[in-house]
Image (cartoon, rainbow, N blue to C red; front, side, top):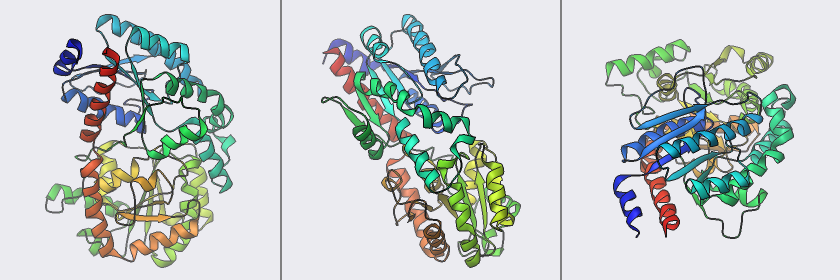
Length: 436
């Protein structure tokens, strides 16, 4: 081991994390970077996040510095403009204090091969996290369209992905070609890059599934009066509050179903709505709450009305983590009918909250969910989805066991503590090779 590497391991690393999302931009990547940066800081590392500028104030975390850079507010194009401005900020940061590791969160950072090489030669080795792929997004949208989810052309962002995914995939190609190591967020994502991209023969790729904040996303404590009161208020507000529900029993006749995700075609909300008539036929007092931002809200509400289930469907806008977590632990079942994910954090947030999950029987969801913690249905099949939900609601004792096992599964391997430890090992491996 070199003297410098020994010193770095003792004193901690200076990690520059380049992420197109960071709070108050609460996307999946933004949430991960926020928590991962904090946990890396707690492990003794100096973390600087370079992200897109935002009109709202960025939350402060001890040991984490945030640099905001301008970006062009156009679909897909923003990844390139943000990437260029982030590179300028990275240069200045390195001049102020030597950066040891550059951690890029793909695909929202678009650098070409020349830029990656310059960073590698003049600043530090690059660790690229593969958070799904543009080609995967495109194929997921096509699959959703085949199942009549929505017209892609109605949403500028979806249309941009459909038309330009192949072009922008070249920046992802540069990332896997020029990084010291790639880190896929699921085995499914790793296989995507092997199938649709052209990794070099010496490509080094690890797989680290992201975790969740298990302290925020936790089961309800009915023995705590404040916790139980908040739970009661949620159940009452959605008219899902029979006597069994109000005391936290799983054999309620007013089940509360929850779906969380952006209101875009590939999230599969239309498939879920088509399943609702059958679900309500078996459980007439069930309520479905959909939480998410997006262009499809009116379309989904019209669809619910057309199907005759409008009285049982409520669509809520995005909300802060505390209120979202309260919804997770107050629900009887979380349904996640997505057509494409790099990993998919919603199912893990549900499990951490002590709520079983019904989701599609395809990777990467099957890397986290099986019959011991939820149910699986055929992607795009609303009849099979309805049957899966009905079976779960008909077996309250099974759901209680699934809730327990789901929480245990998250704590065993899907936490940010696990993520920070895994990435620390990857950083040191890269540093060891770099400093030889």
